[in-house]
Image 1 (cartoon, helix red, strand yellow):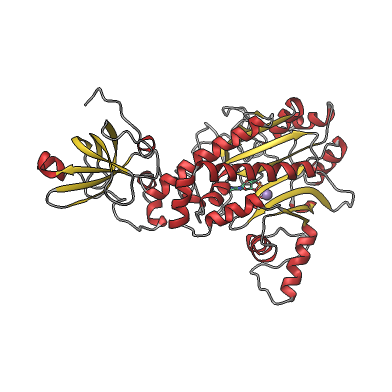
Image 2 (cartoon, helix red, strand yellow):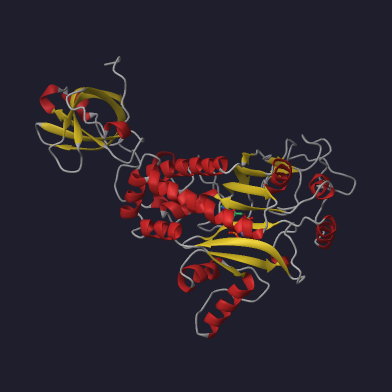
Amino acid sequence: MQSLKRTKIVDLIHCTEFGSTVNVKGWVRTRRGSKNVNFIALNDGSTIKNVQIVADVEQFDAEMLKQITTGACLSVVGTLVESQGAGQASEIQATAIEVLGTCDADFPMQKKGQTFEYMRTHAHMRLRTNTFGAVFRIRHNMAMAIHRYFHEHGFFYFHTPIITASDAEGAGQMFQVTTQDLNNLPKTEEGQVDYANDFFGKQASLTVSGQLEGELGATALGAIYTFGPTFRAENSNTPRHLAEFWMIEPEVAFNDITDNMDLAEDFIKYCIRWALENCKDDLEFLNNMVDKTLLERLHFVVNNNFLRLTYTEGIEVLQKAIAEGRKFEFPVTWGTDLSSEHERFLVEEHFKCPIILTDYPKEIKAFYMKQNEDGKTVRAMDVLFPQIGEIIGGSEREESYDKLVARIEELHIPMKDMWWYLDTRKFGTCPHSGFGLGFERLILFVTGMQNIRDVIPFPRTPRSAEF
Ligand code: ATP
Ligand code: MN
C-alpha cells in the first residue's frame, strides 16, 4: 500500500485505464449504502468532483467501516472501474481502506445547506465544503491570470513596502505599527506620542496602497504592477469592504487616461476569460448552486465594450432618473461621491453594462490625480461593475511638480516624509497612469458570491480577526 503513488482526484476522473490499481487520499463527503455495499464520496480538494469508492461490506472490518463518517480522512487503494451508476464515468472498487483521521461527531460542516453566515463562524473548516473549495481554486486561478497577463504584456512585478511611514493617502484609516509599550507611551513636551525611540524612529503604519512607490517603479522600469496585501482601518461594515485585502496596482509611464482605460478593460476581460477557460467545473457548480446568472454575466462582460462616460454625464443620468421618480437613499449632487446604490443603478438598471466613469470633481479624489483644464475635475477613472459597484479606481497622475505641490499645500497633506515622491516630478517627470483593482472584488464578481468575507480565506473586518 505504501509504495503505490497517490493519484489526485482531478487526474483520476479523466483516467480510463480501467483495471489498474490506484491510491486516492481525501476527505469523506458522504457515505451511503446497504447491508452489502457502501458508497463513499471522497474529495481531495484538487477538484470540485468527488470520486466514488465502492466497498463491499463483508471484505472490511466493521469497526473500521464505522469510522468512515463525513469529514473523516481516508487513504483508499482499489481498482479503477467503469461506473455503473449515473453521475460519474469511473469509480474505485476498494481493496484496502485506511482511516488516516477519524472525524468527531461535532464536525461543523456536516450538514448540507448551512448558511454562509454560519460557515463564516467556522472559516477554518468551511474550506472543506464544495462552495469554498470552488471559490478558493478560482481565487488561485485569478492570481495566476493576473501574473500571466502582466508578464505577457511586459510589466514587471514590483514589490512595494507593507510598512510605510507616509500617511499622505490614508490619513485616518491606517493601522499603526509600533513596538512601543502602549501602556506607557513616551510623550513629547507638547504631550504628543514621541516616536523618536520607536522601532522606525517615527510613526509607521500598514500601507493602504502601493501606488506611490509603484510610481517610482514605473518611472524607471516603464511598466510595473504590484500585487500585495493592503490595510484599511475604515469602519466600513459592508459586503464589499475588508480591513485587509489584496490589491493589484499597475502603473505605466507614458500612458494617458485613455491608455489606462484600455489597459483596465483588456486586463479584466483577460482574467474573466481565464476563469471561463480554466475553472469550468467550479464555475458550473457556482452557477448551479450560488447564482444562476453567473455564467451569463461573465460571458456578457467578456463580449461587450465597457461604456465610457464622465462623472458629470453620470450625475445627469441619475438626476434625470430622480426627476422621473426613481428613489435613492442618498441624494445626488454634482461634487459628491457616488454611493454604491448610484453606481449600481447606472450599471445594472440604466446602461446595463460595465461602465468607466471619468473626470471626477477634484475635491473627492486623491491629490496626485492630473488636473483638468476646467480647474474643477481630475483625470480619474472608476470602473463600475454589475453586482459590485466600484471594482477599479485609477487615474492619470499629475506630472507637473508645481501643480502637484500646490495641490498638496491646498489640502494640507503632511509631505515631510514624501520628498522622495516629489522627486519623480523633479527628475525627468513624465506622463503616467495607473489603477488599483481590489482582488476580492474581482473574485466576488467571478464567483457570484455576495459577501466579500466569503472570497478570502480568513477575512479581517471591524471587530473580527478570528483564525
Ligand atoms: P470604495 O469607494 O469602494 O470604498 P475606494 O475608492 O476607497 O473604494 P480605492 O482607494 O480607489 O478604493 O482602491 C482601489 C480599489 O481597491 C477599489 O476600486 C476596490 O476595488 C478596492 N478596495 C478599496 N477599498 C477596499 C476594501 N476596504 N476592501 C476591499 N477592496 C477594497
Ligand atoms: Mn476609488
